[in-house]
Length: 429
Image: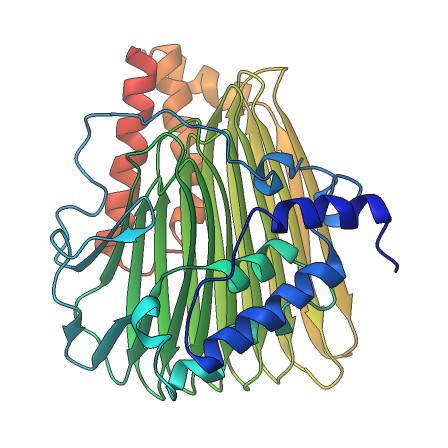
C-alpha cells in the first residue's frame, strides 16, 4: 500500500533532526539499509492498523517530551540477586557503576566498540531479525532504532551462564532521548538469564535481537521503571532453533506511554516460546503489548499471558497474533489477555488473532475485561478483611498467572514481593 505524502513529510521532518552515527563499513551499511526501510514505510501514524489503539505522536515527534525524574526511594529491583551489572545512564554506558564485561561461557561487548571492527559475528544479526520482523506487519520505530542506535550491549553465550546479566537503565535528565540496540546470541546448548530494570530516559526506543540456537535457553525478566512521565517503545525480535526455549516476562508500573512489541519465529522443531506481562496502571497511564509469534516448525509450543490492572482512567491495549505456517504440524499455541478494571473510567482494548495453515494443531485464544469479583470480595470482607486490603489480595491473585510464567523461583518471588509492596504503598498514599 502506498504511503501518503502527509506521512512521508512527517517522517522526513523527524529524520532531518537526526544523523546516522559513525561506525565501520558493515554497521554503516546496516544503518543505511534500515534508514531506507524507514523511508519506505514511513513512521507510524494513528490510522495505521496496529496503532489505532495507541497514539504514536510522542514517540515520533522530533523533540522528546520532557519527563520528571521520579525518586521513589525504593531499593533497586533485583538488588539482592547475584548478577553481572551493566549500567546505562540516560543511554550512556557507565563503566564505574558496571561490573567487568566478562564471565564464564560469556563474552560481552559494547555496540559502540564493535562497530569499528571490519569483521564481527554481530554483522550476521544486527538489523537482520528486525528486518525479518517487518513482515507481515511493519514496525518502523524498530527500523528507526537500527538506523540511529548509538550504543547497546552485544552478548554471546557459549554455555550455561551461572549469573544473570542485569541491564540497569538510569534516568537523570528530564529531556533525555535514548536509542539503544542490544544483540544476544546463544550458541547450541547455551543458557542465559537476562534482567532489565529502570526507566532509562524521558523517551526510550530499544531493540533487542535474540538468536537462540538448537537446545539453548533464553530467560528474560524485565521491570520497567517507575518514572510516571516517561515514554517508551521496546522491541524484541527472536529466532528459535530446534528444542530451544525462549521465556520473557515484563512488569510495568507507571509510565504515561509504554508500548512493548515482541516478534518471535520458531524455526526449529520442538521449540518453546512463552511471553508474559503484568501491568498496573493508574490515571494517565497507557500500556500496549503487541505480540506476533510465528510457528514455522513441527511440535512447537507458544504461550502469551498478559494481565493488566487499570484504574482512574488508565488504558490498556493487547494485540497478539499466532501465525501457524504450512507444515507446522502439532503446534500448541495458547493466548490469553485479561484486564481488571477497578473503576468505570478505565478501558482495555484487545485484538487477539489466529492465522492457521496447518491441520494438526491445538491453538486457542481468549480475552476478558471486567470488574473485581464481587462474590470473592464479599467472601474476604465477611471474614474481617478490610475492603482495600481484600481488593489488593484479589489483584495479586489476578496477576498470578502471568507472574507464574517466570521460571526462576527467586525471580518470581522478587516480582511478587515488589507488586505487593507497590499495592501497599498505593493504598497508604
